[in-house]
Length: 279
Length: 295
Image 1 (cartoon, helix red, strand yellow):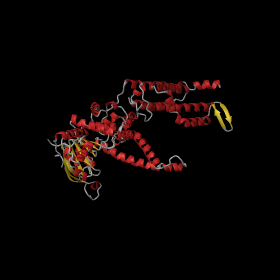
Image 2 (cartoon, helix red, strand yellow; image 1 turned 120 degrees about the horizontal axis):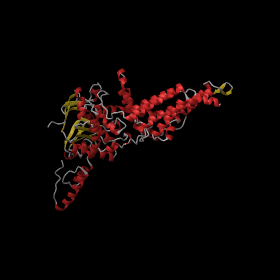
Image 3 (cartoon, one colour; image 1 turned 135 degrees about the vertical axis):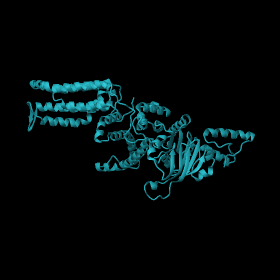
Image 4 (spheres, chains in turn cyan, yellow; image 1 turned 180 degrees about the vertical axis):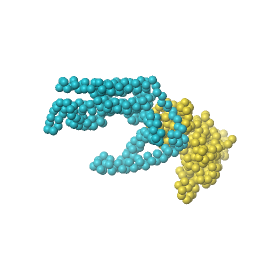
């Protein structure tokens, strides 16, 4: 297995989700984002939450790890919740301080919005946890290939992504080396004002940039030696083939989408009504 | 039999490449030939033109006059570019800058993919190439985590998967530690012996050159010496004047000869040297042996 790729977020494990065709996973993730925003009522949001939790369990990724992906968006989460709390109106007034009013409608909207953002992040990180960067690039190239008709060079874009991914560890290593070399020459990177510290980065960035250009030139030669001549007439080692499980995943997703739409249509305000009556 | 690579009266200068007035050409009517199945070491100082030669051999650079023929294809002809590159595989010094993909087997597949081969054939060639360089176990590993020697072997596998008839390696061990150097050298020697691959090994390590069938010593864009390692390393004065060193075994032999103790033959490797020393010590007893190998 690809057990030593720590780059990106890929978490190696044996699960149905890992084996899913990357194209299907990519499409489903985009679909999921749409569905999350389509879910307007509590029942449909709960439906999405339940399914996402089930899929996360299925992926064998530790729950702790998936929750960690929420950490960077926490400030955004709180901010949207607070704004929605005060600005959304409707329902009964719960609390009024000076000009700020909190209504039941505001409470619900804030809660929904926060839950939506959480689901969004969890859903998309599930994609990066279960798919290697190379598979993702590959899927992207194949999914976007119809755009060749409008003269978009999909192959070059994907090749650039592949090379960028390949060189990230190399350039990180190089940055560490240059930093160490500059420190050995007395460079002070940690003290002083922000401006000073930014300026101290220049002697690191310039050698890094020069080296990156040199590498690029050499890589271009090496690629030419290996008969690279663009995407034309190029074949691939890995053929992506849809398996029954990919179909099953698509059907499951369609059921979810249908459930959400139906709940939106026929069960509006089910929980809201309960909530309002209890208040 | 026709040589696999023919360099015919080639003139080349970098200044002319950039459109400037050619000051002093690097190559002035250089001619060289490489036999199929041979293992040739090309030696020389920095600036002697050995790297430029490697780039001329597969059409990455084109001569201003003269011809370079690879398996009969003229590299200067645009239509032959792919055929020439398929025939002559070039491996560079820095393995980090010639690996394209993050996964070992996907990188090896890069060349065959460019050739537009069917997926089953690519799979077959990738597996075969990885087996040849003994990297099958690392098939699905990340290329960034490999050691220098392993990376260079992956780069060689990437070339092998295109089924070249000749492998040109431009100082492939210069950036490696001694262990990595040994790994790469052994791999290439095995390819030469078992698969009959023509090898042109560019290096400045004399010990490596001692293992070749033929040594070409370059100086200032010309061929200074050309012959078997034993012939080349026997020319101490010429090598010294070119500022080139000798393998340690040869140095010891010359030092012994200087003090009046010539070995029975010029040893190239440490094993040869040990055997020759044993014979020298034996000669002390029965009084035979000459220093006839000295020039």
